[in-house]
Length: 120
Image (cartoon, rainbow, N blue to C red; front, side, top):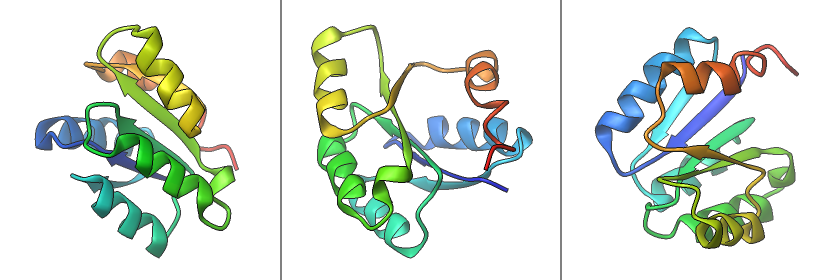
């Protein structure tokens, strides 16, 4: 089972995301802050990380994950509210692999992650 972490300050976003992604076969961890996410990743690095761009220190979180042993192997999705090119470039420079538009729903998460849960 693939490990995935959602780093978002909203309890509701994490709860909904966890429910949907768990149903897709992921073992989902949650973090309400960048610090909490870094501590969780130090314990066990996930295969996938969803980082909300509005999370305080989101860019620092991405850079910290990339600096960890095997951190380059984590596929990082940077969540933005709209297709804000400036924010997206900041996330990309920090090391994000891909983007998710927020608010995400079951359809979006299923289309992006359904094939990834079984991938090694």
